[in-house]
Length: 170
Ligand code: S3P
Image (cartoon, rainbow, N blue to C red; front, side, top):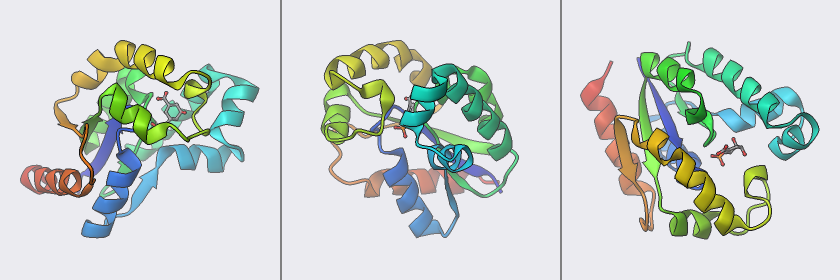
């Protein structure tokens, strides 16, 4: 049975939608960032501060290689996995990869009180606009995309993904 892999920018709703899909289907949910933190024994902010972003990307790459071997999981990824095309290729082999899109205003609204994302330290709006501009083509190159901008509830997004999953299974 294929995995369901949720990709998308920070604040696009991957974790929230992932939890809802898990509740509705009974499939287990794996959160990549949480697993990386557990293994490293420290928070993402600390990994970035102590070892730098390149090291984090390496840990992320190893986690993708490991998780893409599994079956029947819901995998909620970190927003930067699209930076390495091998990550998407690996997940595509064993899963339905769905990209959640959200415009900058929606993202800002969702992350404005958050302090756990090192890439959004400082002027959040500026950082979001800059990083989104670079990554937009990468997110848009993923075949299955759902725009969650302005959607007040994650419910319809979760349902859409479950229906898609049933349509393409195994
Ligand atoms: C990142 C997104 C974060 C986390 C790290 C880097 C990114 O995950 O992996 O802070 O580069 O977009 P979320 O997308 O869950 O916030």
